[in-house]
View 1 (cartoon, one colour):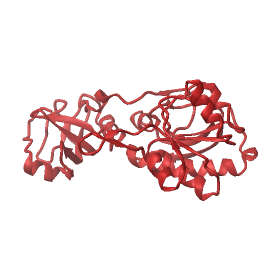
View 2 (tube, rainbow, N blue to C red):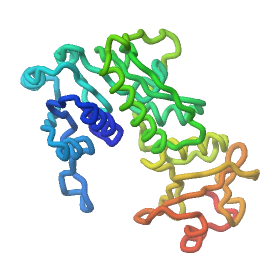
View 3 (tube, one colour):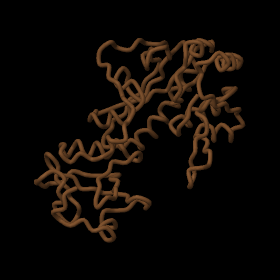
View 4 (cartoon, one colour):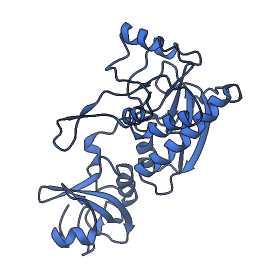
Length: 296
């Protein structure tokens, strides 16, 4: 049970390890494509089709018919990774071994929808992934296996890819010998919640400390992309570094697009204009001048 690219390595690992995947649950196809009119399958849906695994895409699992259809698969275990639908108690209890979730944080820190982005934004030194025995609460279940990794300047895309591979490996280890990976209750202290990312959070706040702005850029790369506006056009900043400069927040300090912040300054490294490809700052400035002294 999964939807985005984060869940694909787990699906592939299950198949490679010889498990019989009786069905794949994924979010329904959504409008997309170049014109936004085609129905586009989710990454898990696409990969399951390629592997010859039946796919179902219910809008909800809350009704009796959907729950009966789920139980009819008579699965030993449901493996869940960023599925996106609430699993009611009838679904959680249907498989013999319950539902095991790949969660991209060190629980109980960053329960919820956006653990990778929230860990980066908060300046956490490390994060990780855990295999959690699901229960009715939001990411409150006991953890069977866990692995850690330093954040160390990684952006959300890089960290998500790393955690996806780590989680796939851990899931296979747990399923090979569940008794060797008993569920351990989460600590009662240190609970934080990773709220879903809001669109307005991607606007760069140059009034913040420069280090926080760099984290904001990393947390929202590649999507939705942290941005500033110039002459009514959004410019996404996909990578930025700290720089030495002082001045009013949001002011362009030099001809390399160093921008002063509430404390310190940043220098964008990779940027993207609307409808254009990713480019260097030098390439941006050749076609889109931003003079020294401009207030962003």
